[in-house]
Length: 132
Image (cartoon, rainbow, N blue to C red; front, side, top):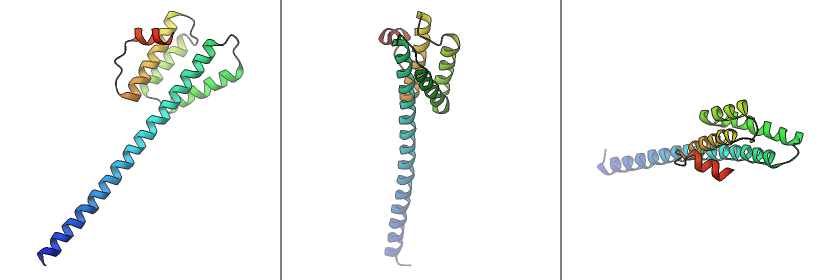
């Protein structure tokens, strides 16, 4: 074989392999980004409906339906830590009517922040004071 042909084949093979690797990594990163976006929206929906219920004087069945849907979405796609903290809050408190309930809900928010960004350097005190 001619050396020019060998060099050309190596070049074409390298470009082809590079394109496949780039496609695979791009696709993987897109899936990860989409999963984070979906989880973030589920977390925001849960937080918003809990805040709406806490701030309303009369609770409607529609609010509780929205809460159930938001909790279901978090259970399906949320991280293990978020689900554990959510379970703890709804098992022990269910509503934001005490300082302990506020702290428990702040733990859910902290777990959500850790899940979405990888770390959470904010203390529970800061989260609780900011939320309530």
